[in-house]
Image (cartoon, rainbow, N blue to C red; front, top):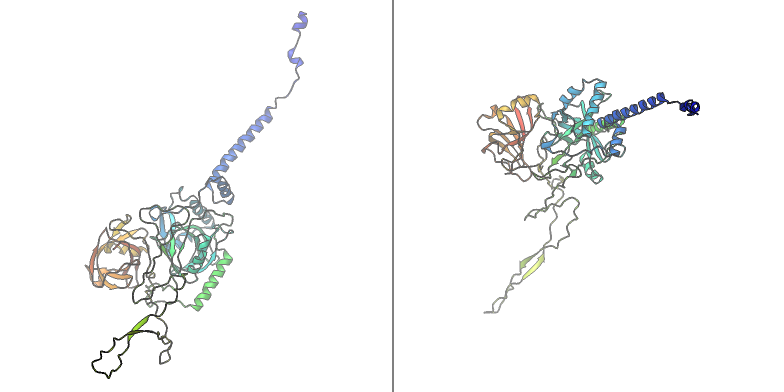
Length: 500
């Protein structure tokens, strides 16, 4: 028994198996690799939303915000570049550098400029619309319109200005974005951010710009913009491809052959616009927050008040007034002759007689066709009268640097305002019109003073000629543009932003 007990081998009765340590090691390493790849992939997805697949993943899991609306005073910091300066900056980039720049531009836009310290390039200057087309679901911006425009003073620059808007705004957009209409992008009214740069076959640069304010505009018809709630990254940018670009250039060439451009004898005078200029209109009261998404408040439309002796204007789309009954004018009936003595004559009775209006002649006696006088033509180099923008009370304008007339010369030499600036000083009115006035420095002769062209909002009354006044830091003018003409005279274009 003892021998049997001590001779028992426990290990000999158990089946022998393999531990497979090598396979387990390989499996664990594969899991580590998969985890590492997922970790790197998440960094790539969150760091490159401009990639269509990455954007689709982020959008599916609600990890990316929609483009939002900015306020002028809270916009991303940037630099404002006219056509020539922006061409000189980006025309030197190699194809590889341009690809890297485009990735950064659209990435910053998709992230609402939160994760970048780089200055945003904003386009400024005067442009003329070559063509416009509706946006569809096949474009990056699914609804609205895009306008292809060319630099008025530097044709080597083309911009495709995207107007994201609801479908109900398309009729108003089509009426405003017509071929030949001027398009002016100002630093104080527009934030046209560059999101893509494309080199064309002809050596031009085509910039895709998006208005970060998404505000309301007035032109031929009023319309409002809103941030796109959804983007389609698959088509990419630019929106206007090569074939559509060629068609737009041909369309503008045909338009120019039928509408020759009028130029001035003075080379320093800008070309006259040939259509209605689009002007942004502020509809949010000062101090109130601007909605980040959705549509802006509608533009308030004033109700016309009838004035004696003048015809009441009828708004577009309003039903025609009901025909009125001709007014009756009492006409005194002459008393009859009486032969009887001491008989009082009867009291005259007023008999109403209908008044028949005499139609106005359509042709003069000499055979000249007579047309109804509508309105006098304004200065073609200035926006149309009756424009509206945000105004403030004395001392309530947004903070900005105020400059005097003597400090404006370097700005004219630089060619771009570049920041929000106010103008102060002592002025003398040399000319006054219905919605604008020309001022000079009251302390200097006219030949030694810059020329100040002031534009007044609708309802404001320009000061009379030869009036003198002082505008300090509490009642400044807003500088919109500064130019030096061929004769060396500096012209300062300003806007009245203080309530009178």
